[in-house]
Image (cartoon, rainbow, N blue to C red):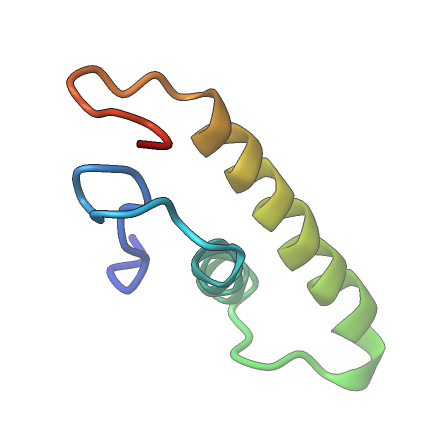
Length: 74
């Protein structure tokens, strides 16, 4: 498991996760799954696209979660 990926929902973090937080987690995930810290030029496009798609999926997930006992947007 990627131990450097942190939980991005309250109460694990006091505020909402930023786009930067989500992108960093997505990058760590893609690095772990692909086995590349930085892709070769011929793999850059697919690597970057995966990071973008996982970032978007993470935002969708976090926006859809119902966190009981935590106020959102307060």
